[in-house]
Image (cartoon, rainbow, N blue to C red):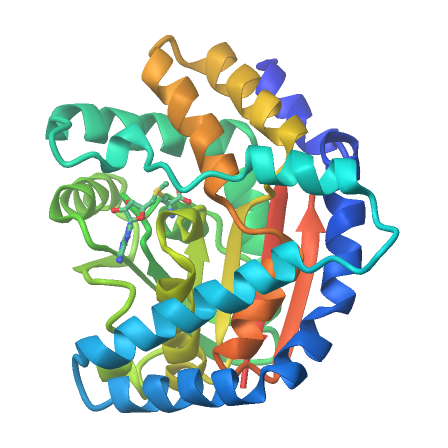
Length: 319
Ligand SMILES: C[S@@+](CC[C@H](N)C(=O)[O-])C[C@H]1O[C@@H](n2cnc3c(N)ncnc32)[C@H](O)[C@@H]1O
């Protein structure tokens, strides 16, 4: 058995004890923070409404600027008596430096190799199976549901779900990504395996035209590629367009998970740059309290954030 198969047995708090206890305190401060900054929240919501009419760079700038300010406020204004070591550690772990796969000069072949490796990694670690369970729960009770995966790379999750149908809701599956080469690879793999998955090139920040065509959006392991303003814009559009909103899954930021990412990539891939990207993915990720703040800022009324073993945060957001 590949050692990665054992990873899902690890409870999330083992790799992130300080990060999660700090985050619990931050979570309690999300609603008071939003209430205390009502005018900033209003500016963001109005800018989000203006963006529905079409591209609006000024409004996008406002969303980015104010989301960042509120996120920093959550991270930096700790009440007295909290653990300063945990705060300093989180500051040291956090990074916005891009992954190598996002550098513009990196050859496409390399990027495709990394995407292929990630797809295999997700299968080996059982991630697709656990992500699929969240997706099915989110559409439970519906006879049929159109699921639209955003920033899906080569659509591994949708291909997995098509290959492993479950009783209950009949699913119509679409995978999308900004990058045409990943979409083309996904399409080829789905066609070869005769899997009923549709593929589309799409920016995850342009969803308005999908109104009436999607019941649930999904976004896995991609949120850390987006800045906080882009994440707010994506969540706002997803909950506006899809009645069941968004299932968003990403890595949990903690020092232990940075080390785990180095170990897991090292065990399963000989390319050192992938080890760097694995660690950087964790460092760029958002914590449960941060996601709760951004989802509420985006206008979500129903927000549920859970930690999932071994190293994920699952956000469900809807109107
Ligand atoms: C780490 S991969 C995740 C792939 C897949 N969702 C998974 O769980 O393995 C991140 C993906 O996000 C995509 N991406 C980044 N920004 C995007 C955007 N604005 N719109 C659509 N896709 C985007 C990248 O092209 C890349 O395929």
